[in-house]
Image 1 (cartoon, rainbow, N blue to C red):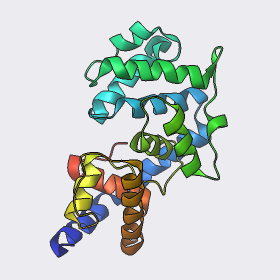
Image 2 (tube, helix red, strand yellow; image 1 turned 120 degrees about the vertical axis):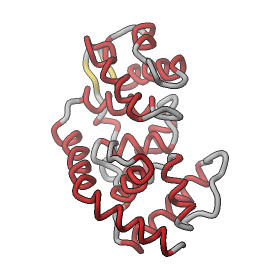
Image 3 (cartoon, helix red, strand yellow; image 1 turned 60 degrees about the vertical axis):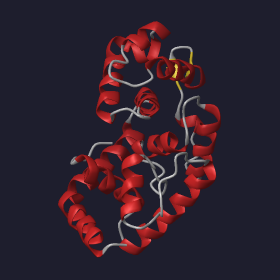
Length: 215
């Protein structure tokens, strides 16, 4: 690990620490006080993020929530709101199909599928049952609702920082389950060594690349 990069990481962490901790509290609030619709909307946000800007994905979800299109609109209505999101046809289909899992009649039920005692098991279930959701998206969703703080969200920003810090040797073209879990373990070791929690570390890496703390 380059000493310069290591020192830059801690400098950045200290600069953004308060903002990062406040954002983690926001995530906790969603699980503790949010409605089932809030949880479903967060899941849909994570379905929209692959290879897309998180900000544009968030704007798409806001458009979808307007007039309840996200919750009750037709497939074509969902597609119309996916402005700026890459692969809008696929992602509108993912959202439409996710509603079949988490919606019964007019009511949504997300919490009943989440095992609080075992985030890893919940992540596996999400990957296996929610179309369009891989390990990154499932980890992202659980973190964003205040759960899974020991899970890694291995997007391009995180992987780039992990490589620069010597946590991993290279960035693979494809993240298989085996590689994902191996990199996650390496990130946990780094987290333990630095004293920066996994949830904080993700936001440190992400903000280090983008200049802001988002979600």
